[in-house]
Image (cartoon, rainbow, N blue to C red; front, top):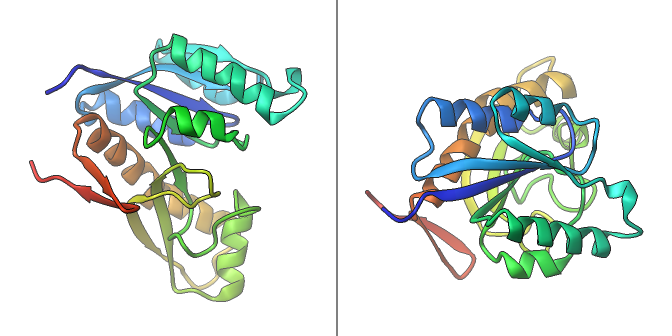
Length: 212
């Protein structure tokens, strides 16, 4: 095994996906990696409290203090370098990152999206809106996708996907909760662990998982 990898989690809100990662780490499910820092774009984010409760270092880099996404991304890049990030996880991080960061950490940034990409993804598809659209379309299955981040919104190579049944009488809120519990909170820690164990191979926008 290679050296333990530093996992940096970027957050903006409640931090439920961060909690799923912390829980998986404490159960010993994340091989060869450790959450070493949580960075929030919002000083009020509850995710910061979640990190503090588990003695994980936190940093606040408030978006409001920067004139644009480029200057914000530059500052974030500096913090990530200081923290020696090996893997960056976007866990409900609401800022579109400039390409300078995506290029600096190529295939080292992962995101979880609450649909089966390429359905219901791209610009404007986040939060409840994704589930509203899925219900509007009448799909029978939805789910979540963990993917690498590239310069196209939700366009990076897919690492893992998990399907979730859409039920009669679902509201966007009910569906959102089921997708989180049954898919997001399972495949995000799994993808993080696979990355840290050097088991992900990317070729032509396809991710292969190396057998143990």
